[in-house]
Length: 134
Image 1 (cartoon, rainbow, N blue to C red):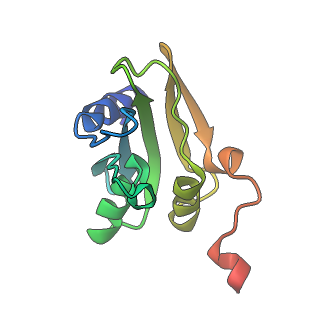
Image 2: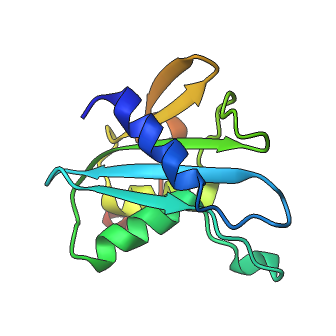
Image 3: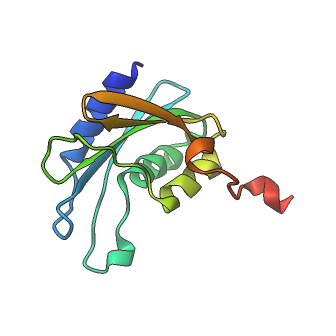
C-alpha cells in the first residue's frame, strides 16, 4: 500500500475522533504484514489519564484480533480538519510500537503537502524493549 493511501485512511479515521476537550482530532492507519489495515482515532475522557491515542487504538484493535507483525503506520492530527501539520506519536505510543515493531518500522507523517517517513528507531532511540529483560 502506498504511503499516500495510508495517510488518506488516517484522515478518514480521524473523523471518528472523540476529542471534546482538546478539539484535536487524530487518526491512524496501521498496515499489518498480512495486508490488513487497522484504523484508530483518539478517544478523550474527562479523566484525562484515561484518554487513548489513535495510534494505540489501531494497535490494540490489531493485536486483539491476533495480528503481531506490522509494516508501517500513518498518523495525522489537526484542530482544523486540514491535517496540514505533523502529529508525531507521543512517548506512550512509541513505547507500544517498540513492543510490537522492529526498529525499521515506518511512521508516516503528513507535513503540509509533503508526506515524510521516519523509522521507529529515529523517533525512539535507545528504546526499552523486551530484550532488556532477558
